[in-house]
Image (cartoon, rainbow, N blue to C red; front, side, top):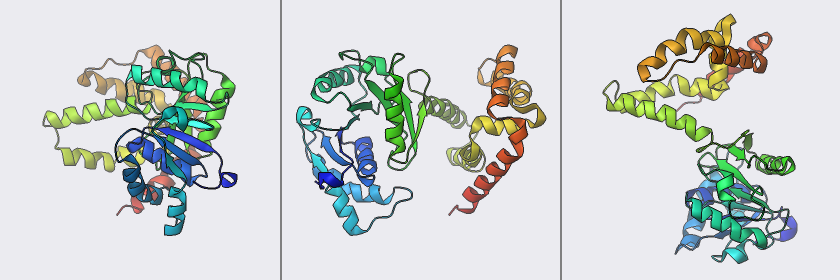
Length: 310
C-alpha cells in the first residue's frame, strides 16, 4: 500500500464486483488507499487484472504504466469486514440488493468505525431508513448511488433519511465532489431513486415498442442516438422541453403535446393545476430572459457531441 503520508486516507470498499471495482478505480485515482472486503475466491487477482482498464477509462486523467502499477499498489484485500473498516475515512458498500444483508452489515460496521467515518451505500433501490434500521444511529448511513460505471460517469445520487443531519449530507456531497463527481441531492428517498426510475420508464416504453413490432431494436437505438440522446445530454429533458415550448415554455409543451400523447400509452394526462405548477417552476428555474444563453449552450454541446462521433 502507498505511503500513508501521501494518501488522503483509506476507504473500505465492501463488495468487489463491477461496482466495487469501479469505485476502487475512482478512489485510488484521486489519492485514496482502498481496502476491499469480499469473500469471493480469486477476487484479488480478478480486480488487479481489470483495474488497469478502469483507470485508463477515467475521463480527464492519463496514467503511465508505472503510475497504474503504483495506483494498484494502493489496493489491499481483507475478507474480515471488522478488520477492513479499521481506521477508514469512509465505507462504500456495494453488496447484494437485499434489505437484510445491508441492514445487518451496517449494524455490524457502526461500532467499529470512528464517529466521523462516512457510511455510504451504493444501493440502487433500497432506501436509507431500511439500510439503517438496525443501527444505533440509523441516520448515519447515506446513499451514494452511482450511475454505472462510477469511475467514468459523474452522477452520484445522494439521499439520507428524512432526519439526516444536514452537516453530514454536506460532508458526503463534498466527498464525492472531491472525486470529480456530480453529486445530486434527493429531497426525499424513493425506491430506485431518480436515475433508475427515469431509465425504467424510458426502457419500458422502448421494449414495448420493439415487442409490439412498431420498430426493430436497432432502429430504436438509432432513434435515441439521433434525437433524445444528444439533446438530453446537452441540457437535460426538462430544460429541452421548456426551450422547445418557445414563449409558452414547458406549460405549452405539457398542455399541447404531452397531454395529447400520453393517453395512447395508458397514462393519465396531467391535470391543469399540475401543468400550471410545473410551468411556474420551469419559469423560475430557467427564466425566459436567459433563454438565448441556454439555447447557445444546448447548440454548442450538441454540435460537439455530434462532431465527436466515430
